[in-house]
Length: 116
Length: 113
Image 1 (cartoon, rainbow over the protein chains, first blue to last red):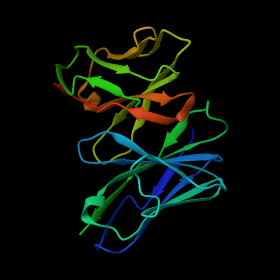
Image 2: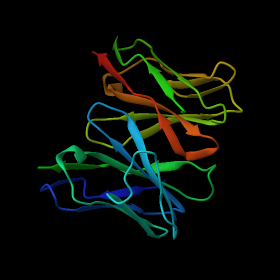
Image 3: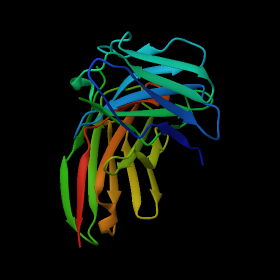
Image 4: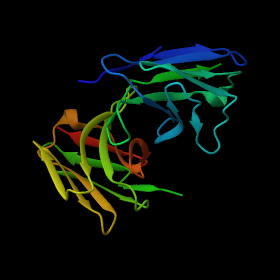
């Protein structure tokens, strides 16, 4: 089956620093990747959609200069949280979709970010 | 904006009983409705999905029903087992994009042995 891998699974960083999260599709080419954020005991909220080779589309209220998304290849997308603050602590989850918008997207295992 | 409502937020059943979780959605253009199981500290795992041209789908102990007119869809788990305990999320596609999902708030299911 389709496998999406996120790295790291958990990370702790100091306030003010930046942290990068990778999302890889291991056995298929992902034309589109989605980044979600999930606060404790809450639902998943879409942050942005990225297509390979294009700029990401951000959801309303998500700061594009704070959450930098790069989708430079068909198997890798990265999310960089810049100048992290404690309120950015959350569970970040990516999903990857091959083909067109009518195909299923597969989720990664998530990255737990803690900003201290 | 688009919204998905999910009920109940918590559900406790005895092992062997059935569990039903219900969702409603607002986007008339939604055509894909997946259900996910999420265990603590892990990403969501797809357990079943249904498309708008189908009214019901079943996979062993799990079934999903969809009423497009009423914008309702439900998850049914029969013969529940302790390992079914987890948080379950329903979702609806935003328009026709199966990857762009609006999630419900989740249901914490506890199955007591």
